[in-house]
Length: 289
Image (tube, rainbow, N blue to C red; front, side, top):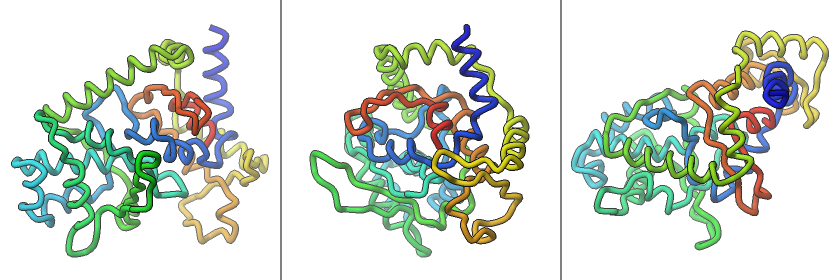
C-alpha cells in the first residue's frame, strides 16, 4: 500500500515537474519490440488517427486501389486506419519518423488466409490523393536488422487526432489476439506483472489538478531535467517565444498525459537490448517526457 500511495503522490505532485522531453517515446520508435504496435488499450477497437484521414480515404482514394486491400471498401479503409494509428504517438515527439516492423504490420492487417496485405496498404497511402501523399516512407534500412521508417505528412498532423472505433469484427478479433498476447507477455515479466496489479488501485489526477500544479511550477520558474523552462502556452504558438525549443509547455504535457491514460493504461512491456530492457508503461512514459 505504501508503494501505491507513493506512486499516486508522484503522479499528482510531480508529473508536470518531470516533463519536458520525449526521451522514452523517441527510444521506443527505434526499439523493434515497442515499435511493433501503437499503444494497446483494453478497448481494442479504439484507435487514434489524424482527423481528416478517414474522410480522404473514403472520398478521394481510388476504389480500385482500396479493393486490392479488401473487396469490402469499408474494411479496406479500416485496415489503412489501423496501420496509420501506429504513428499516432509521433504527434507528441520532435522526431516524426517511426520504425514499424513488417511482421507486426502483417499481423495487424492480414486476412484469415494469412495473405500479406500491409504492403498494399502502404502503396495506397503513399499514392494518397490529388493533394498529396498520406504516408512518407524512408527506404533506407538494414534488412533483418532495422525496419523501415514511416512518417505522416505535416498536413495530416495540423488538425490533430481523433478517436476512431473500429467496426469490422475480423479486425477487432485480430486486435483482441494481440492484446491477450501482450497481457501474457506482461504477466511473465515480474515488473510488468506487478504494474498490472497496481493499476486497479491508482487514482489519476484530473487535467484541472495538473493545470493548477503546472501554473504553480511556472511561477516558481521551474526547469525540467533537460533544462527546459516550464511555460504556460496560453494559446500562443511556438513562434511567440524566440527560445521555444528550450521551453516545456504545461498544456502540451497535459495533452500527452491524457493521450497516455484517458482511454485506459497501456500494457506494460519490457524492451529489447536497444532500450536496455527497460519497462515502459503509461506512467513511466509520462514522467519522462
